[in-house]
Image (tube, rainbow, N blue to C red; front, top):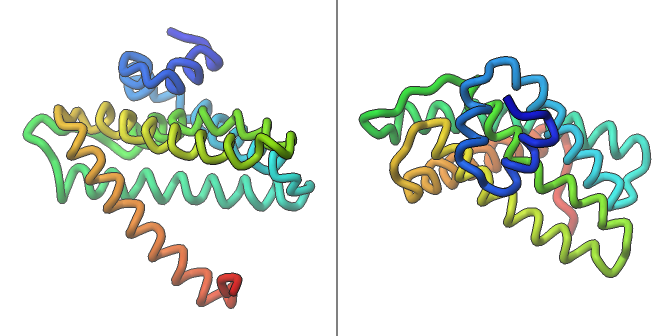
Length: 174
């Protein structure tokens, strides 16, 4: 069994064996929470968010991760399964959580000249890692299907969070 840091590195390297190991290890859920939290804190530091921003950002990131994993499980096992698809929400929580590992590099955003490029590169890198995580957790043969599950899930989550923000009185900046 790999170490916590070893798993984060393997996940960031898009190593499918690492994702398979994480998928099978039910005890890795706490580690996945740690990766999501570390990635969120790194982003907050990189943006200079302050203590309240770090706390709020971490709570929002954890909620988003949970909703994303739940939606991905539902879409991947009910709407777009392959014949061999067998998965539970825990597997997706773990693999998607570890797919957040590239976000830890967002701490480099404290260097003003690096903030925009680091955030752009880590966003794309994380999206690719999520596709690999979803493909492995759902036992898909098709990367295209995993991309489809991620896109559909992202759209549903975006609509959900937008509606919740509007109901809460949070308006987008003009």
